[in-house]
Length: 203
Length: 318
Image 1 (cartoon, rainbow over the protein chains, first blue to last red):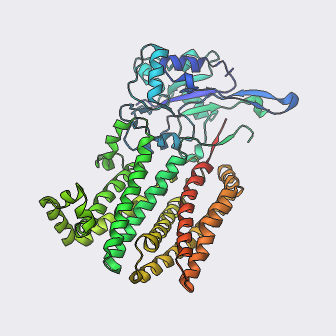
Image 2 (cartoon, each protein chain N blue to C red):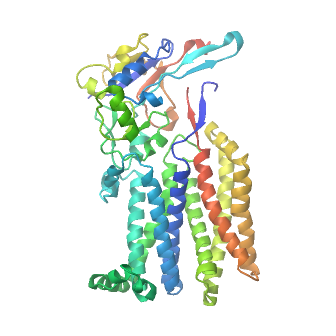
Image 3 (cartoon, helix red, strand yellow):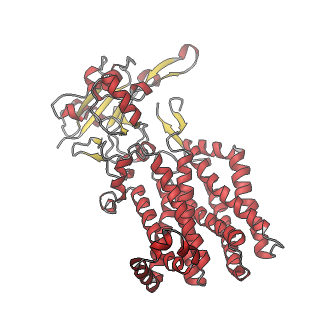
């Protein structure tokens, strides 16, 4: 069995946003309204000489206990056997309950207008109907044996992708060592995106 | 701590507050008027006004949500009753079914009374429809099984009122919403606004001296419900003050806001509580104080949901 997970090393993310661009081109996200499947907010932490910039890439955490799935009234949000949480756009009525339930701010809406603009922006648009949208771990690429677009394009190798059910996978070892931690585990969502904390910030 | 971002949301705003308010009010109005008709005494006017205005409120509530959907055609999946088998954990699925069946059973309960009312029988289209053999037969069946139909409507009504709270409770990131007090608060508020609305009907639109006992009973129930709501809100205040940063920030947003404090707690709960309490204990010379109290309770019912939606604080670790 496969159980996909991602590890993001905050020490090596340089905030180049190449992951955002690669994802946008791969998944045709509505960038014209600043909506991305993955994005990298930056923050200044500290004061005077101690101030430093921090980049924090985030995306759908593909939780094992996803609140977005349990609130979805039509069954548009579903989970594959390999742990990937996906949306069926034809089945999604766009009530936005999933966006309200997601503790990681990973979902955004794609409207009729976005589809119109998207056709001009990307030339040919894969999606036909409006729906909620989010990261799919590039499931279509994984099915072809490729890595997610953001992982492949990351210049600092900050993003690593692997199979938690494979004990020799470096991602599994990072997670097992405790170096990589999930976000807000107290919520019981069991996320599959892990972060290696920013050591500089820890001092 | 300094890496955390705390923010309110702009996804579900006033329109969801409207959906929750009209959904809860409409459902509780139907339930209370049917229970009165079944167990107090038969009351044609109350049932007709309660059922029709309740159905209109539920329709407004559903229309507000439907209007804000991204993909209107896909609503078909949630209208299908089988949704409860494949999405039993989704409260919107339950809520949609409760609202739908509440409207159906509500209209069926009111049907025999409609056929007894000359106004409906004279109405173009409606009158013709009510006189058809099928509707006459259906009306006869409903009359024979009055309590069963009444209880089916009532159960769906209570379900709708509870659902409005369960929906908000199902969002785990926000401390103000994700706790067992929310369904309780929204249910109590839904029934309190329903009693207020029915008091308005009995005092303004269908006043009858013989209904003094029903008015008195409704007023007494509303006083108890408002008091319960105040107790729940007080426990919410204590709950949000410590335990989580999200909850604390929600508390600061709510309790530093004059609209919440004076508008909702003051004029939406405390003032009508005392107006109705005096009405229950000593009575009022005229109808105005009761009508004013009812209007204030209705205003408060919307304000509660409005402020609740805007005061939910998410905590993001970036």
